Length: 113
Image (cartoon, rainbow, N blue to C red; front, side):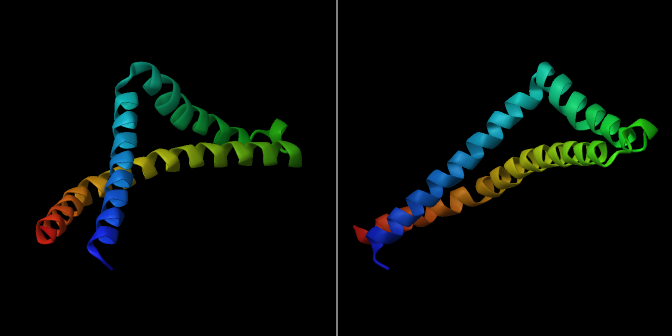
């Protein structure tokens, strides 16, 4: 692979890593917001999750349709939580690797001169 291709690939990787870091920082700002904490973290991911799980055992919610609806709600809550966790995982990984990519880019550019 020639230097131009390597540089292009590194630049794309750096851009992608920076986007992941930016997403993580957006989420971090949201998590500091009292409304987000009240509505999403506490309200939805904790309280609503507990309410839906408890509803699974409610005698009035034992029809197949109700159970399927409750299962879907539980799955939805889980997917949102996993999405938020993924943003942190990708952002943290990007932070750990972006400097190495920048250093490699600098070395290639120095060699090309």
